[in-house]
Image (cartoon, rainbow, N blue to C red):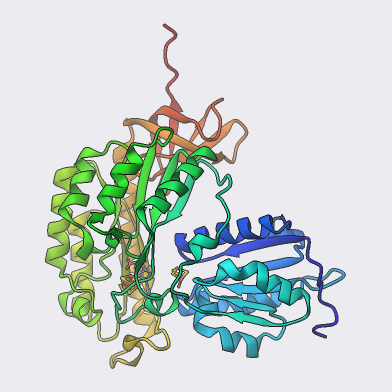
Amino acid sequence: MWPAMKNRTPRTFAVKSSGCQMNVYDGERMGELLAAEGLTPVSEGAGADLVVLNTCHIREKAAEKVYSEIGRVLNRGGAAQPLIAVAGCVAQAEGAEIARRAPGVDIVVGPQAYHNLPELVRQAKAGKRVFDTDMPLLSKFGALPARRKQGPSAFLTVQEGCDKFCTYCVVPYTRGAEVSRPFAAILDEAKALIDAGAKEITLLGQNVNAWADGERGLEHLIRALDALPGLARIRYTTSHPNDMTEGLIRAHAEVEKLMPYLHLPVQSGSDRVLKAMNRSHTSESYLRILDRVRAARPDIALSGDFIVGFPGETDAEFEETLRLVEAVNYAQAFSFKYSPRPGTPAAEMDGQVAPEVMDDRLQRLQALLNAQQHAFNQASVGRRCEILLERPGRKPGQLVGKSPWLQSVHLETDASIGDIVEVELVSAGPNSLAGAHLVKEAA
Ligand code: SAH
Ligand code: SF4
Ligand code: F3S
């Protein structure tokens, strides 16, 4: 069947990103590249002539999904099959296997090579199957077109890759070594985003708090963004406990635009498990960091990532994770069953935990985390705060935005998307809150 039925003159495209925010950012940038080539973006279901699947390799389920997605896109019907590009971390990790298992794929392009997408599309149009999973020394960023409008809350990748090599994790292999973008390039991109309407910028990196340019650390970047007119809010994610410097913690006390929210993954409450994970912090050192952050910014909302069922994890060690969660009191969190990943040291370790044991642990952990999140939301009722309006709500006249603590808040208002409005939080559910728009009295 392939390649006779392929559409070799693509006019429209769709990019579908899964995985972390850095993948979302990459997907936006791929869209900007393709639009600069004259292709028109359409929504994913609309029968695009070129479909880019921007994939995630972090857990087995995410990676396997790619093959069913490819099948779905190829079999969607219509006069001709679209060109298909597989991008992102699965492309990097399994490019050759994708080529073998999925002959309908035209392009495989890795996360450090997607600036070459226009050239790869040209070759695919000429009937070639093309692969680019290089990790060039010169970064892709210099070869990307200007930023376009991305809504009131924008992502900005400042740091790529990871050198931490946690024993369960594929990121150091799929994204490569830790590299920081230069200070000046980041400021230029931030200004372009603000010019395009961004009110909030979230600085992104797999270890964003390891960002450095010479002597300058992330807090310098945050303070420089703080000085940009037009920008109202600054966030950053994801952080590693080992890179939570005194300077960054101080920024939480001193920089008003830096929102009171910190995502600081801990993974486990057991020091033996943490050591086997190569996390290089203990549960105690993690808790002491949070003490310092809370001292700097008492209302900070804390978030984390957890893995249950790491190889060798005992019931007692899992209980230590529950104790840590109780000690922290999270506003939000993400928890996962351990997934053995090819090529990582943990996949070869003894004591792989049975699936039903993992299910049970995940359920117990999530019950506790959900209860904490609900309690955090309920404790917010009565608070007055600013909401950055980001999208329409479910009901007419309703808009949804984010509180400073990253809660979703819906409200009736005649303000517009992109506005920052003063609200009182009036009721709370487990996942969102309702707000009442406080209209300032006319003078
Ligand atoms: N760089 C970030 C996030 C990396 S991936 C950090 O270090 O915090 C996001 C989360 O996925 C991780 O924090 C971890 O909780 C989870 N994760 C990573 N590898 C995993 C695996 N093999 N199985 C299950 N969860 C995993
Ligand atoms: Fe993966 Fe660990 Fe690096 Fe995070 S710090 S990306 S979990 S290796
Ligand atoms: Fe997934 Fe790659 Fe991000 S593996 S979590 S998309 S860095």
